[in-house]
Length: 130
View 1 (cartoon, one colour):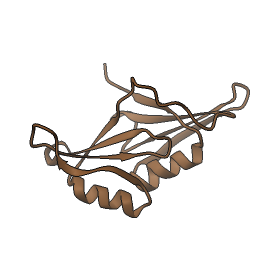
View 2 (cartoon, helix red, strand yellow):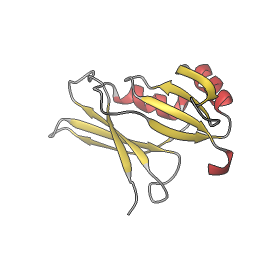
View 3 (tube, rainbow, N blue to C red):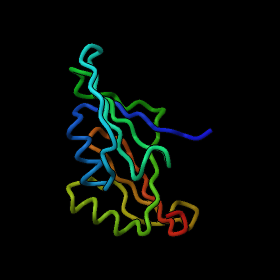
View 4 (cartoon, one colour):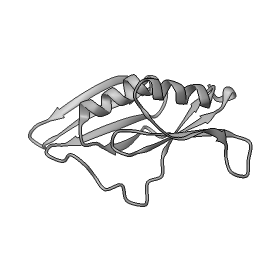
């Protein structure tokens, strides 16, 4: 077994595709439009779906925003340098919500950014994981 994808409901599909491809550096892997069921999907990721987990962006026709709720936390992405990743996100127009620094009570360097719909993305500095 393995994780295939995480689904996020988004208020503007193209805006979210632009964020994940241009700001976060992912690739648009595939899209599906289901007008009869009134939704569209876009799958984005850092590699082929057969090799790793990806993000499924779901746009339900006519829904421009969602309440975040309290159950979902964040998506985590390994980066070689969290501070440099923050600068790249900021330069591309993204929102850095926590600058790079050690996690509370530890030494792992993390940062947080936020996508256009308010979802948090943790950047974890991990040279060995890349």
